[in-house]
Length: 190
Ligand code: HEC
Image (cartoon, rainbow, N blue to C red; front, side):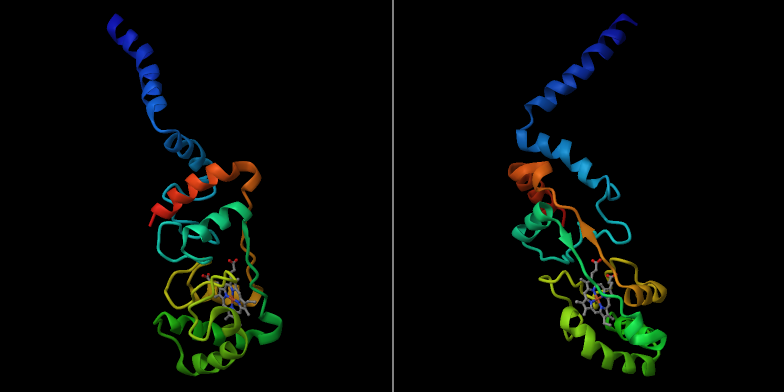
């Protein structure tokens, strides 16, 4: 009984001594990473509108520099709302074409009509082949990875209403050194 009580008292401090021996970098990551990930599920796989950080699909580029810039300055994505310009039929058709890019079965006539609109309007940001442009944060539409969901309804809603994903800047909150460590951690996730 007495031993167990002593054990309980000693154990926590023993654990802290262990933690204190870890390199400062590891400790900082241990403390800061959960704060950032509070916005994401614990496995960093992302919610709707929050990208998965553990796959190999990088909307804003896959180099450590790109990742560091995302954390430091944040990112603001601007996908305009195309509903007013395309109308409901146009939105449905471009959605069919977009879905066909990742091999989904769609109505061939709708997709053909959608391709015309896509080449005219969407290719400027998403690329002629729909694989995206990291400079603009325009995601790859052809790899089956969806920021806002790949159901036809969700894709149509992205096109009709637009999307404005925001990653806040962390330069002031974290500072250069901590951002460097977190960048390394995020880079290591995939
Ligand atoms: C001015 C550049 C631009 C143009 C033009 C543009 N998009 Fe986008 N699109 C974006 C950006 C940036 C995002 C990411 C938005 C975000 O992260 O919140 C996006 C997101 C999307 C998404 C959501 C993808 C996902 O993973 O959930 C779809 C679908 C989409 N665009 C389709 C289209 C279609 C179809 C057109 C043409 C009618 C089009 N876009 C035209 C910039 C553009």
